[in-house]
Length: 166
Image (cartoon, rainbow, N blue to C red; front, side):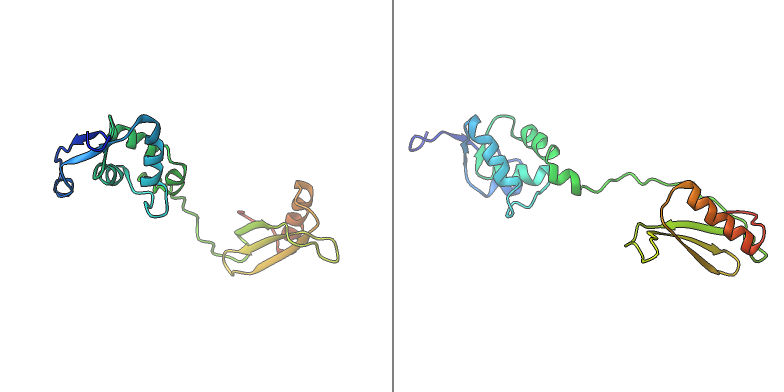
């Protein structure tokens, strides 16, 4: 005890902590959340990882189970979880499509919207692109229900002949 403060003898685990002195201030249980927040979440702390936060706290302070407490705190940090990069790389199956050899054989279709309603009351655009010629066709639609979209698709087929693939 020094000046009514309890200190813990430092155990040198790395070169960094060895340089800082011989004792660490012992933190009461009720102040541990404040220390964790200060050394992890404040703008100057910068949401560092577990080991960096443990090293920063242990330079000056000691409390029982410091590494595991910091680990639990950092792993449960909402901001860190939102920004954490995932290490798993998901690969989707590669799907190959036949290259079209004729006009209007294969179309790519999409529905765009909602957009600001036009003077004619349309809020969506049905788009179709011929994969061979790259011809773009756009049909304005008042809504996106299946009946309206199917009418646009039938209009496309009637205008450009029978479609082999969509």
